[in-house]
Amino acid sequence: MNLARMRGTAVVTRRSAKAVQSPAPGVEGAKWLMVEDCDQSGKGKGEYLVALDMVGADRGQMVLLTQGSSCRWTFRTDDRPMDTLAVAIVDQIDERGVVTYAGQG
Amino acid sequence: MVLGRVKGTVVSTHKPDSLEGLRLLLLEKVDAVTLKGKGDYVVGIDSVGANAGEIVFYVTGSSARMTEATKGKPSDATIIAIVDVIETDGVLTYEKSVDSGAQGT
Image (cartoon, rainbow over the protein chains, first blue to last red):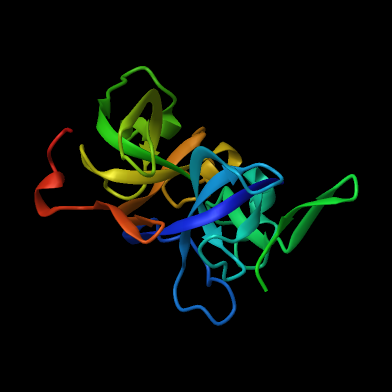
């Protein structure tokens, strides 16, 4: 599981009929996030991916990504062509007792 | 999912029967902010009817077999969506224009 920053969104109308099941609770329609790989302090690495939002992440928040076939092990993505999910919002990271990242609120 | 631009088509006559009738598209990975090509190419199977010049995203690995078009077929990169708009950090970095469709960029 990799760390990434939620940086933006992609809007899509034409997609595979199977491309997505219902999204995060309380969110209408699928939300495609532009996420940037980041290190444990939240510093971006310049590499972006498109991730399906499972948690309702906001811009700037650090998220946890699940990639590969493991993405299909949720009720919403079972048997669907998904290979990158934002599965959690990171609140805090500490490394050897020192906080390297703390989200807002 | 990875962002790419459709650069062209790939034609093959000698291939497994299971790939018969599927479109093979030449994709170049693009940067999500500048939309510039990274010089990194991949061949993807089309499940959405993408045309040259369009920005798409594709799934890789076993997830590539999860669309109706590629179920049970030896695909490891399948295009699942055509992108209309990309926004990062509140700025529109890409908006599909009417003429971007059939133009090879």
